[in-house]
Image (cartoon, rainbow, N blue to C red; front, side, top):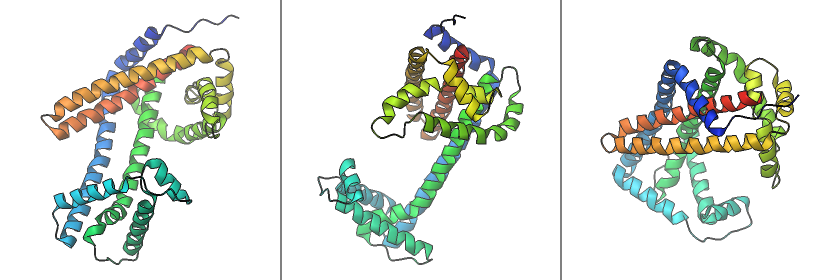
Length: 307
C-alpha cells in the first residue's frame, strides 16, 4: 500500500503552533511554573556566590569587587601558550587553550581546599590564591544547581511532550501520570543513545545522523502506550523506513525555527533588561521554556505524520 507523502514544512509549523494554541492555558501555566523553578535554581546559585564572596572578603580584608577583579585576572592568566606535557590534564588544558601547568596547580590547590572543608578545618586564605578557594567553596552549590536544572529540564520536556500528544486529556491527569513514564522514557533515551551509535569515536556522528531520524518517533510510540521500550524502537525503525531524508529535513527546519524563536526571545529579554535586570531574566526564562514547548509540539506533529 503506497504511503501518503509527508505534509509540507509550513503545514508542520502551523500544526505545532496550533497545538500550543489549543492547549493555551496549560501551556501558559507550564511556562510560568517551569520558569519559576529555573529561577529558583539561579537564585540559589546567586546567593551561594554572594555568600562565598563575602566570606572571602571577611577573611582577606578585600572588598567583593576587588576579589572578583583578582579572580578574573587569575583566570585570564591561565590562558596562554603553556606547555603541553604528556599528562591527560595537560593535553586537555592545551586543547582548551589554558596553560596546562597552571591548570594542574589550580586543581591541586582547589582539591586541598576541598579536603580541608570536608575535614571541618579552615585554612588561612592567601590573597594570591583566591580563585582555587572560590572554586572549592562553590563546587557543591554549582553541582547541586546543575543537577536540579537537569531534572527540571527533563520534567519540562516530558510535560510539554505529553501535553502535545494527549489530545483532550486534562493536564492534571498528565501530572499524575508523569511519574510512571519517567523511568521507561529514560530507558528509551538510553537505548536510543546506544542504538544510534553516537558514542562511537569518529564514526559516531555520521552514524547518529542516520539513526536518530529513524528513531525519532520512538518516544511518541512509548508515551502513547502502543509499545514498550524495545518495541517502540522496533516500530520506529519500521515506520520510518524510506523516510530518512524527509524526516531529517523537517527536524532541521524545526531546529531553524527554534533558533529564530530564541533570537526573538533574547531580543525581547534584552530590551526588558534595560529597565529591570531581574524582570528581563524572568522574561528570558519564560521564553526559554516556551521554546521547549514549541520544540515538543513540533516534534509531536512531525512524528504523528510519520506514524
